[in-house]
Length: 109
Length: 109
Image 1 (cartoon, rainbow over the protein chains, first blue to last red):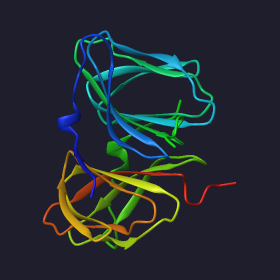
Image 2 (tube, helix red, strand yellow):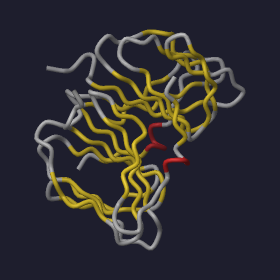
Image 3 (cartoon, rainbow over the protein chains, first blue to last red):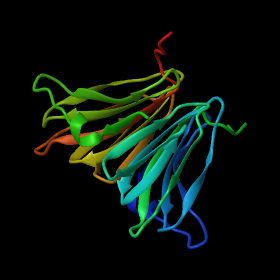
Image 4 (cartoon, each protein chain N blue to C red):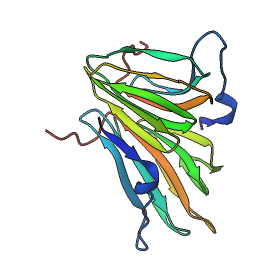
């Protein structure tokens, strides 16, 4: 039975946003993104995969398409396939969010 | 921009476990399952879809295959495609968990 503790995956990297994997299958991945103040995930898109961000701690400015919104713990946003999306932690607190994406954009063989 | 507030989806039903939808696309769904003490999700499986449960509040006994584990807030478990899975809230507290499943077992046209 594959069980994970979120707290043990709450790891940051002073150089850039850190992606910590909860689960990864051929069908999707589920990560815990940890961003120090000032860190970001550059806007990008996935032609065939939908993504969800769920803020667990702190606050971040999320982009989906041409829109930007500040979201805090307990809020979630959908980035549908083909839409540019990203997040910036403008600080001063750390930002932690759960991320689900399916289908997996780079499934393992 | 499709944003949801988890708190507004924290809804229970005295008759049975309540599934509250955060997001649903052709590719996956993301729900908030709310279980009063004594409620459960009967063991079942999905031949082609993987599921993740992430406990947000309370404690539940999760089954995956032949294994059973009590998980509490901050713990998560993977139920891979084809494995029987379910959850029981043995109480006394309410149980709230995020559930992510992909691909969507009944995609809308």
